[in-house]
Image 1 (cartoon, helix red, strand yellow):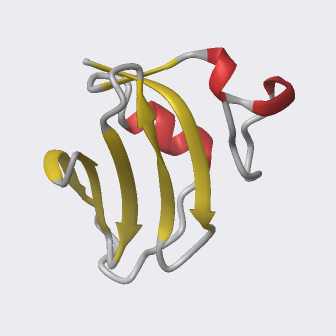
Image 2 (cartoon, rainbow, N blue to C red; image 1 turned 90 degrees about the horizontal axis):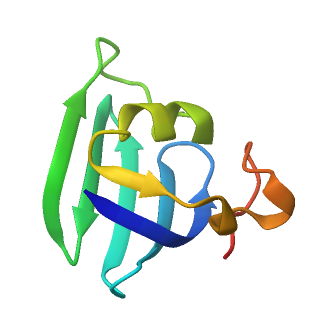
Length: 91
């Protein structure tokens, strides 16, 4: 389990994309496009999911957090003003 301490949504759709850091300063890269969702830590894929919609490229932050709950831990400090929705996210 990796603990994410900084996260920013860098693209909303096609791809939905987030970038950040873990508590140990590892790079986090999360991406969803063409129905493929992946989580990379320091350029190494640690999680992958394929949806039933091969052309899909939009995912909400809430759905991303639910999908990654077994591999990523999100500290509430990650989210500016306690909101994470579809906004940019900062520590």
